[in-house]
Image (cartoon, rainbow, N blue to C red; front, side):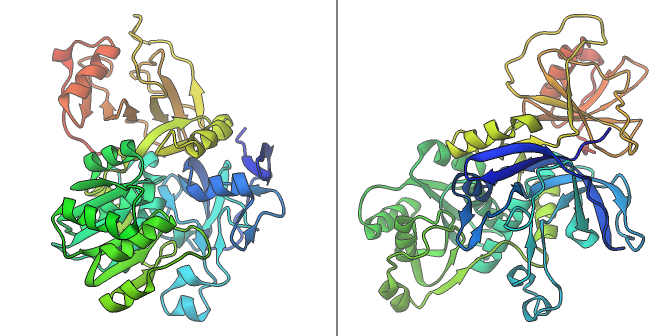
Length: 464
């Protein structure tokens, strides 16, 4: 029996798992989505710890989560763009569609926005979620549902970069190397920025940023904001200032340094949220005649572009995923994120079952050092578990049977130590034809499955 087990915030620091009624489609334009994966956002953690963000206060028990991907299990009679079995990324905020902001194309500023896990509305850390069909974005075959769960923070970054008016050849400074800051750097790179400087106080985050998208990194010092700005600009070879500065931290010293780092006539975008009131270098802003913008969530076209950036390989969101946990481990995952022990943790939906492993190839398999690695298989729309007989179960690795689309001829193995596979059965051997992003990964899987490397053919392939 399918479950609508939900991860509920009762009050600050107090969460529980609660079986709630399965939601139903309310309009002909709605769809019912089985949630596969949900990422943990900083706002989720803030509600968990403090019970409020600004004027949004948790007064009644609220389901957390809003960064989700899932599978369509039911559609309204007027829905023509999606079908049962489609894999989708969920845009978790639904505007009224009628107010002045909505009709002006700024629906993210709708005063009557219904946004997941923002009081008083429940979030997506549950078995099922009902959404308008036009706020569900179908994932291309080469984009996994884990990646789909990161479309939401990527759309935030897309909106910020659009607000910044980043152009090819620009220099861009990003304050903060958390998930959104990292993604802002990646989107700026995709937009053609040639110098991208990530700034943070944590060296490990900066090291990751350098490998991910940034051309330069700067460790913020305990010195005056003007001095920090001067030092980071000299480091990047842009002494006159950056074309664009994005603050993705919300920290007062970073905001102050940001204004001093913008060149005359440049752009500054406030993407991070922090204290309601801060000391702001208004004189520097005025005499530079810079353009200053806020950025809030995402708007028209942002989700579609985010999906395209992932599908085209221009932004590799997989690198941000620290690990995936079972649904019942949600609170432990929140603790890890709160303590800064992870970049992005995904929580599997409550109907994602982790199975113990017995190798079908009849031989013991080696223990591998991939804590939390997982191998995923799909089952059909009726939710009957199916593991193709040629797909060996692997000991010491979690095998997850997901809520995917029916695909009897294929099984998807999206994450095995960072490698992705599309394992296709052939007559050569059970699982003898293994396709992957590189031959080394395919050979590793072959060895795990007891298949001789010479029997394994590697090819680039799209994931399903």
